[in-house]
Image 1 (cartoon, rainbow, N blue to C red):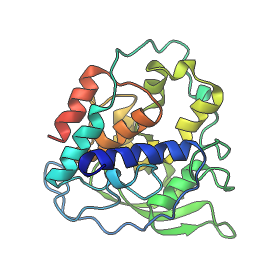
Image 2 (cartoon, helix red, strand yellow; image 1 turned 180 degrees about the vertical axis):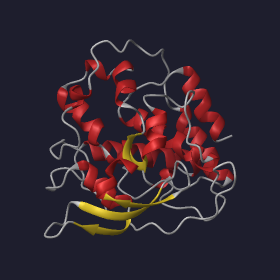
Image 3 (cartoon, rainbow, N blue to C red; image 1 turned 90 degrees about the vertical axis):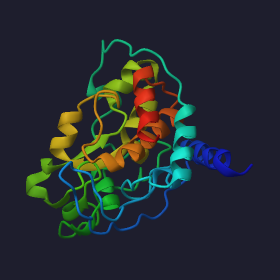
Image 4 (cartoon, rainbow, N blue to C red; image 1 turned 180 degrees about the horizontal axis):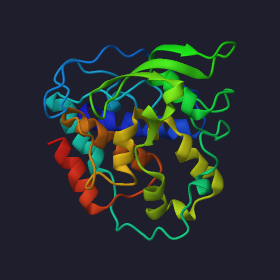
Length: 255
């Protein structure tokens, strides 16, 4: 199989392998951001990893998708996502997905390594990472290039909420699209899967809430196709549909 179909097949195959328990790959360090225009669109060098080349989420960040071929591949991937109406939120609680940032989720990369999920993600995406004295886990400072806003954040642990970990496909959204019927173990898995997690600007994450792409997109316009791809990757890995409006919006970002 060649071309676009091959890339989609490889991505979905890796996702299946991850669910089967394959280990993580080593992350890379992020560079410094480029110039940001008045609309919050990062017009400089791209950062992080192209999501089409990162189907298990173990590589850092979220790079822009810019080439015509990659945009075509992105649309082909999103086309595989199924749709249905968003169900009721009845019974949803964050605790239904396990306690926050559990290290004991099964069959996801970075789990069972003695470090909680939040610190794993800060380490994955941060540059110039520094740890608490005597620890190789607890991050106390780092530089983060935020894909959602295009800003560079000089983060310190005393201002922890300045950087939040976003569930790309929000947990309450997952609940409404079918996760309410899952086992506790499967809900814990999606809540701690690095494919579904990005350290981002805290205010942007708060503004997003539990919105799907039709209701919220990253302020930095240049990253929106990549965001749509990542949303689709989580949807496909966990066999969760999205709303028709969300799928249409996702396709539009990669037009």
